[in-house]
Length: 308
Image 1: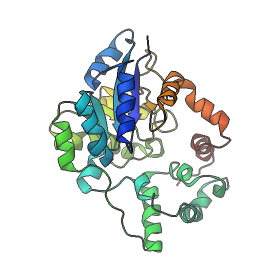
Image 2: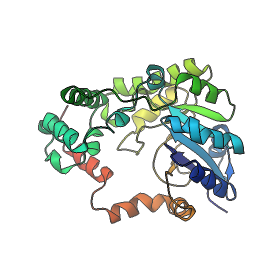
Image 3: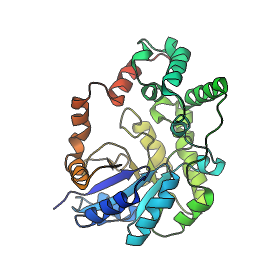
């Protein structure tokens, strides 16, 4: 019997790939809602053979490509979004930098922040550097670079309020919170971390007119991105389950506020099967294959960062 899992998607570029992947998995797993999953993980032992589908961020491809396929099959899922970004029609910070010249932006960031680190930043990737800083600093860098280069604001690429409300009213898709601005919560002070979590939950509840009981951590690696502080804020806010991006199958040992998810974005059926089968060891295998990874770089940077 297959171990139970939670899958994580972000953007869907190929509808046929997504449809074929879900069709294949439906022969091995029973797709369940977040409510059903909550009941399962509250048990003394986790049932085998169930799968919950999650999407982070609310990219418009969810509405245009994934949502119609989920409806066609009747497969439930949870969509984690920021109410702030949807209401204001603003892209997340990592979406805003996609159009930048990576080399130029990297040079700009290093020139602005080198004195705050005890290592040479030029050796580290720009995303590793950005994910080692508070969201206010990240946004300042983005605005500063855009102004210097006279770059226009990019087109909004996520779902809008009307699409969100349609999805929320479907009865098939649960809506969960994903902070206000997608910060790395571990980089924030107590006040900001609390605000990002609690405000996203309350604003989302006001927007969709229903309780919000599920949460996904931005970036989502335990310790590196969140910890006990964030879990306590979620408990205080009435959250029932919170999801990380730690790759593993569901096991009783996991906290209800740090459930693992297996990220899927591409690949053949065989590749997807292997990623699920070896979920817990996948990142370790990747780290062995690659001398430098973002997680490795961020750990070094976090150990060599001065107060910002």
